[in-house]
Structures are given as structure tokens and as C-alpha cells.
Image 1: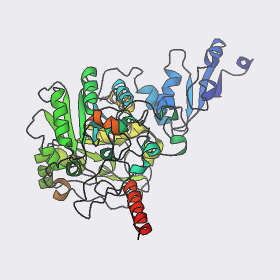
Image 2 (image 1 turned 30 degrees about the vertical axis):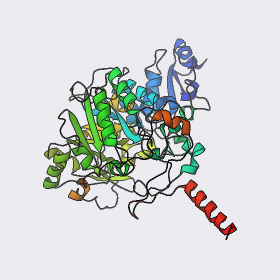
Image 3 (image 1 turned 60 degrees about the vertical axis):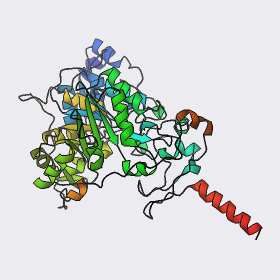
Length: 500
């Protein structure tokens, strides 16, 4: 009947690929095939980058278009989109095969594995990152109280594990690490950490919460197990992030020695087949690895900068071969609009220092307006600024960009980088300061104290739930206050009052 007065139909995209309440794709309907049998074209409507997407797409709007035009069952004849540039890049540029030839060589570096899809730093997150095309998989090394090195984004386990459900009585304030209270790995034995479950970390609320179905998926990974995964899967390389080395030394925990030993045991210290990147915000940590020429040392710059004087860049080169910088060290934004580009990348490149930028996230709330809620525009922008690596929660998106047919010279279409002021010219904003020597050079690491609470992983299993005693604070700047210690003190005071 429709054919008698129309040559095609426009239908909501959900009529073709239904999505259930858990935001998971359901089997496709036969609408497209049925319409095509009747000689009708089918146009799917309702596409927008800032819409609620199925979790199958990992918050990547381009992958939704590919689902409608590049699946094995059918292809719609057109899409109606509020962001036509994203539809064009998806259909005209992105490969249907994630193993297509790679057009650009910029490194794809995972951030806690594929932490946008699974709890970070777990076996399943690393497996997904490798499958999604990450060149370098990363491990931020933490230490248990009994000296086990394992992978986790940070020492405070409150947001990345279920620690709050079991060990709130072990909450402490460690001013040398962070201002807020936390449940820290170095106050828990490895057996206690293994009793927890990983927890996916969401950075946004509402519809941008990361997939609840994967909330507690995967298993914790020791540093040795991480290195074995990398060797078995033959990834291009690994990045080992060392944090809080000076503080851990005061606790009797030698994180630098643990990393060195693990790399040696994995025979990654005397080979060049796989890259080994050692990253730290502490220049003294990087110096510890200076004598191994096969390691690439990466200085983690925590603060935003707008460039680096030549002499400072040369000083960075004494400690590091590369730097990690945050996105706002390249793009200065005002009121969520791009104001200008900094001189950070050219200044560091002039000193022969590679630049890795992150952390990239697909969620549209993570993107300034100039990127049109499209993570590919952000990646294209950093690529246009000649960065050497993308550090990302979603390696699959960076991989699709790297294999895009539109990144080569002479391509019919390109994923255009944004230009500050093109979409809207914001009010002038002060740029971040230039990199200084104080941002680069750190004091020598202290000697590792005797760890009177350290015990073997086997012994610690028999003392699960027993708080490890901590050494007395070395100065007033380090405050470690345990809730359980406060309770014990209060009980002693009460007894004294009773017998007074």
C-alpha cells in the first residue's frame, strides 16, 4: 500500500534495532528487509551524538551509524541526524574491520585497560584493550601492605573496588597522597584486597553512567600477571606507572625495586621486541631506570601548562624521553568553548621529547562544545597538533580513527579538527603557566624503611581483617589517622575514667 504513494519510509531507529531497558541491543527486526522487498527505501531517524546510546556502542556515536549501514544483515538507505558530520565520518571514513590497514602511527595507550567498558586494571579490561587495538597497555602499580605489586588506578581503593563495604574501619587520611580520607592499598594485605571485587568507575551521572552490567566484572591483576598478559598477547608494549614512591619507602615498601624485579623476571629488561615505558611524576623515580637504554621514561605532568622554555625542556630531557600531559595543556577552553592552542607540543618536540595526551573519554560531557559531542573530532584535533600518543579509556575509538581512510593525504573526506573560535568566540581566558624547573625536578628518594608490618602473602591470609600497624608520622605534614585507632584510644580513655 505504501508503495502506491511513496518511494520510501522514515522510521525511528529503534524500529530497526530495538534497545531494551538495560540499554543493550536486541536482535534486529525485519523491517528493512521487508521494506526493500516492496521496493521501498528505508531512512532511520533519531540520531544525535548527545542522545542516550546503547552500551554496545561504548558511548561512541559513530559506531551506532555503522550498526545500521555495515552489519551483515542489511543496510538502511539513509539516516536523519542532528550531527551530520558524524554520520558522514562514520559512513565515509571508518573501517568496518578494526584490523584494516593503519593510516597513522600515533600510539594508542590504554588507561587502566579498556576502563570505559569494564572495571579498570582488571584482566578483562586489559583483554578488551588488546582486542580493541591498543598498542600499549598500562599498569598503575600499587602496593599491598605485605609487598605485593598489583595494578590499580590509585592507592585509594574506595572508588575502584568494593573496599567501602568491608573495610570502612580502615579508612585513613594520608595527606601525602590526597586530602580526602581513603582506604589505601598499602594498609591492606594482598589477601584482603583479593577479598574485594573490582568496581567500574563512572565520571558522569544519569545516562552517562558506565555499563552497570559490567560493574564488578573481572579480576585484580598483579604486576607479574600483567606482564605475562602483555607477553602472551604480544602487544607492542607496556606502560608502568609508578606513584607515591617516596611515601611508600617510608612505609617500608620498595615500589621501584618491585617494578624492576618484575620486569627482570619477565625478561623485559634486556630485549627490544616490546616497548617498556616507565611513567612517574617523580623525576627521581625516572632516574632509577636511566641505566637501561631499552626503557622509555615518561614524565607525568599533573598540572596544566601552556608551553616550556627551551632550558626547562632540556632539563626534562635529562629525566625523560616523553611526557604525559592533560588535554588542557594543548587546548585552552573558556566556558566549555575552545579559546586557543598552547605552545606545549612544539616546545617539547623541539627538545626531542615525545608527547602523550589524555585521558580521552567518549562520553559527550567530557568534550568541549567545539568537538560537536564527537570523540573523533577531539582525536583529530590532537592528531593535527602532532601528539605522539593518545591515552584513552576507549582504545577501540582511537583504533578506528587510526585505521580511517580519511586520515591520509588526498582523501575525499576528512575528520576535521576543530578550530578555536570557529563555533563561538569565548571571552579571553588566561593561559596556564609555562613549565618550570620546580615542576620537573624532585628530591632524591629516601631509603626504604624497615617494614615491620610486612609479611608474606601466605601469612597475611591468616590475619585477614587485622589492621596493619603504621609507623609514627615523620612530620606534621603527614597525617595518618585510622578510625579503628581512634576507637581504641576512646576505649582506653573510658577505662581510665572508670578506674579514676
